Image 1 (cartoon, rainbow, N blue to C red):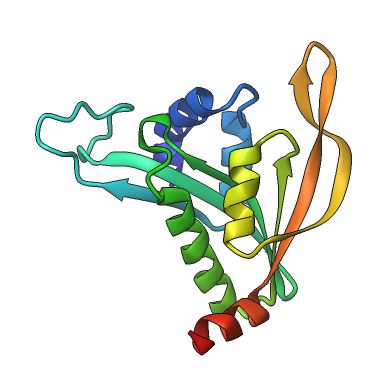
Image 2: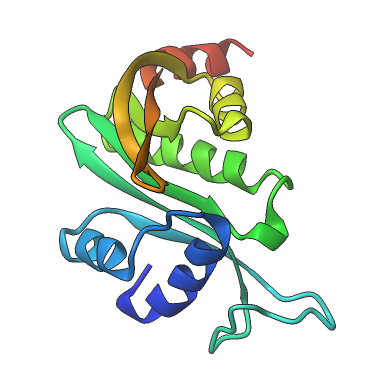
Length: 165
C-alpha cells in the first residue's frame, strides 16, 4: 500500500464499516513503516472497477499490521463489500501468518468487535483463540461503545500442525 492508494482504500473502508478508519489512520501507519498490503486482481471482462484504479485492477482488500518483538499485531483487515465471503480474508490471514513467521514472530494478535460473529468465526477457523476482552474499545454510535475480543494465534504451534498434515 502506498500513499497514492489511500483514496481507493478509504472508499473501500467507508463502504465496509459503520465506523471506518480515517485516511489519517492509514497515512500514519504508512508513515510509521507498518506493513500495509493490498490484494489486487485483474478486472473481469465487463467488470466495473470501483473504486477506480489507474492500472485498471480491482482492489479486493487490504491489511495493515504492526510488528513487535516476536509478534505481529493485525490492525486492520478488510475485504471490499463486493468481494466478501469468497475466501479473500482467509487468503490474507494465511499470507500474514506466513510473512509473520518469516519475520521471526511467534504470535499473531488482533482485536475484533464482539458483535462481529462472521469475523470471529473466521479467526477461530484460522486457529485464533480468544484470550481476553477490551471493554468499550470500539465506537458504536450514539455515544455507545462496543467491547473488543482479543484473539491470538500461536504461529509456532500452527506451523507444527501444518507440517504434520
